[in-house]
Image (cartoon, rainbow, N blue to C red; front, side, top):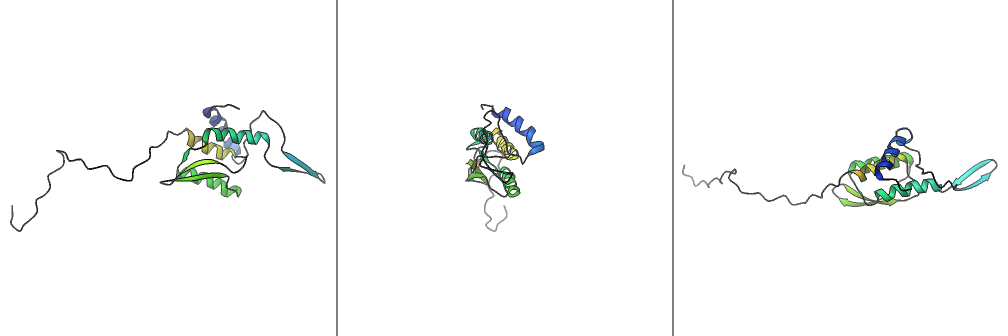
Amino acid sequence: MGLSIQQLHTQVTHLAQENGDATGKLRGAVAANTQGSFQGLTVSNGARETEKAFAMDILKHTSNIILNSYDQAELFSGSARLGKNNFVLEQVGGGQSRFVGLKSDQLTLRDAKILLEAAMRPPVPLRSNTPPPIQMGSDIPPPVPARNGTPP
């Protein structure tokens, strides 16, 4: 559809306030998903084209972003509510994960909002495991001489 990440975030945030668990859809292609009918009941299989378009547009802006532990907890709380984990993540260390993709063609508005907010954050530089070296300067007192039993 070609929306910028800011436009998409604004729309998703507005919609997620009332319908967070609803599946996101983009208008344009209105082709229906596979449907069948049996004794007056309509059965649907798969995602509608509008749902696929929405998920792909979000994925375009958010693939390979780094998710912190808070983002992961929010995504997994939605997964627990809906009973399905829809996310492909790779551990990168330090409690962070890289968002690789989706397991389906659908995405809830709440999850889209979480991913877009993570994508809009400035990247956090990776911290080194080694502490910086201690610099000897004039503000550091000289080492205490060893005691040999005689007072100074």
